[in-house]
Length: 417
Image 1 (cartoon, rainbow, N blue to C red):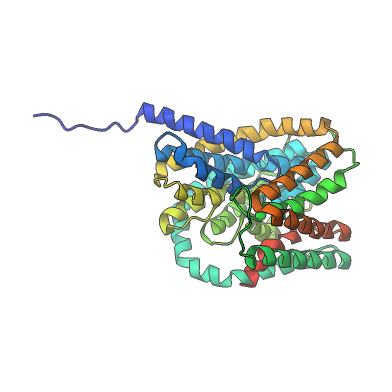
Image 2 (tube, rainbow, N blue to C red):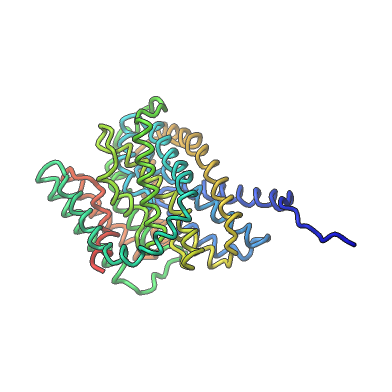
């Protein structure tokens, strides 16, 4: 009698190939994360366009795409901190984080972000299945009350400004950015005529709202100062609480359509321990946790609900990648571990290079890059959107208000419907 064939539980050849694909994804995610203003969604949709031409099993191509997306969520904090130019996911924390860099605490800020992201992975993986079950049951209730919750958060952020002038500026910034978001993200539905059909108007809007005002202000300035110690001054408990809150908010992003990482980070801002520094360190941890945990929760939401909630998962679906959870979660874990190390090592060097570069020339070059990316992703309208967003983005600094009110560009359209 011949014994039945038994497939080995561990296939060395497949594992080596998988590691190679994930490593390639990590390289791509590093490049996209370090590019000022480039969102993971833009890059993911570009990957989806070329995925069919990549030789290899579709599952491994998907692992590479997911690895790139996770790595991007770690590395996108670097240009947000060093240059004050975020992508859409890190917009809410960009200015508090950049303020830490201007205070000479950039190395600490990088490590806080890396901790937020890696803790989010550790929290999110065991919570993914129970959270999926809970969100399926609560989905309709949350979705129905989301405009009310977001409106209350926006009002609370305005009312907690220091004085009347700052509150007026916060209200104006929220209202103007909300109108801009409604006009361009909701009401405008004509073809953009862009060279790259990969992400639409989010890039020019966030580049103008959060990046351009900082770069314009930096022209003629002295640049970032020498950076001090990398030691994290925040208490461990505060870091853990902020990361846990961010992970929970990332779950909302993963399951509720229309809610972005930046919106979720803004919503948990009032609950984050401030540690005596106006919340900058805790907010940076929480925003990084939201950004990274969203990648995990959204993957489980895709498996459970059949609906992609992020650009990376839309790209996976377009590329017809099989939803092999063990392979995809392994890619997430490997990319997260490498991403943690890259934030610390590459981020420190990035700060050093920016600190040694003529800041006026660097600011002008980055502004030109943002204009070019605006055209590439949204055509002529993208350049107009970038210019209009830049004008709106100048409101908070002229009133001494927090720039988080500019998140009205996403929150406003959701509140009205």
